[in-house]
Image (cartoon, chains in turn red, purple):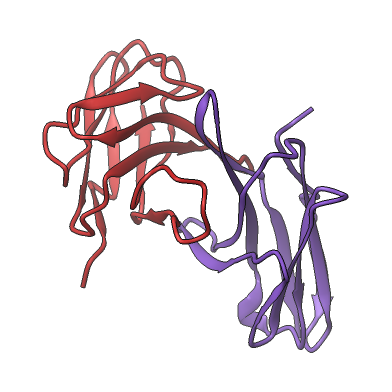
Length: 116
Length: 112
């Protein structure tokens, strides 16, 4: 079955450490996204990528970095510059970036990061 | 003004009740609309797209009102398993590019 795989599911990090969250999709989707969700809050866009080797900052990109070297993969690095990294991180993908009702987002199961 | 707004709730309803949520959006050029469901500590999953003429999927009915800039979700005969947070999503293409805006969600609790 096609889908999005995020790993690890749970991650603990000490302050000052960088950590990389993995996101892999086999849906043949061009667009991929990273969101952050805090308790009781909505989803906030960190970065998105419309195509391989291209990505754009979202609303809260500071302290994060991404790469898109392969269509299937869009890893997110949470750097030590991110002041409040403890959150639920969601990766998503879509066919493209057209605003029509066939272009739906599919999410991975998420990665829960806790900074100790 | 936020792009997409939802009443956070919670909406507490008894099993079998009918409940409706609204979601308002600020940009009249918005083109596509969706409802997602998110269970506690899980990822959002697509519930249904919202068609201009309205659409139904079993107990769920979605409506779009472009004049008043809102979409709605109606759930009939609520089940305990309907308890979740319902997210509204609005998308558009503009000169600034592609925008995909989430509401913060409406929490529903169906009780026995």
